[in-house]
Length: 113
Length: 116
Image: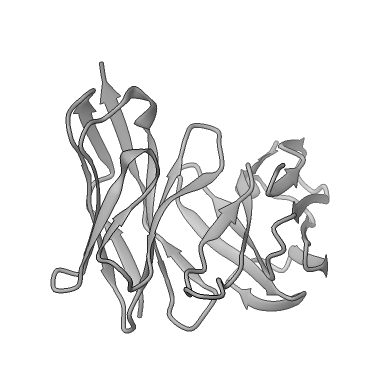
């Protein structure tokens, strides 16, 4: 059965320092993986997606994620945090062969001035 | 242009009432979804329709009834509202890409339902 685990419920970084949001997945199939961002009182926006092409995926706003099959991980990174990055981030796996998506519990990113 | 829109944005109502939330997408997608986000930000899928056919129906009280009049619309009707129904409800849509099976979802802005 597919599942996704976000290892940190809260992450705090200083502005200008790197961001690392961790996600581990479990999947019987070659997974489709996504990262979404939700700013306060807003809908979810797709940051990036992995669909069995390149293992290093670049997304919007300077974010990228690396698919590591051996570690079953899909961690989200950004070299330098900006105040506008403060939001809730969700790692998502699509259940292979279906239209069903499983969301992680979310990581709240706080960026300190 | 708004890709996925929901109305209303806010809905405050009393226990026992019946209410509806509407969703429309102009992306030409063939699959639409309803999600519930609780106060801890946890997102759970409720329903999904593909080409107007119900394909996902999670463990949801039968007071919740989705309706898809066409591929571009998916409405959610809730009967006999309870305090525990208070949440943010998100509509989403997706479409299989022709070259890459990515299936990414596009979300609406959400409807914040408060039951008093």
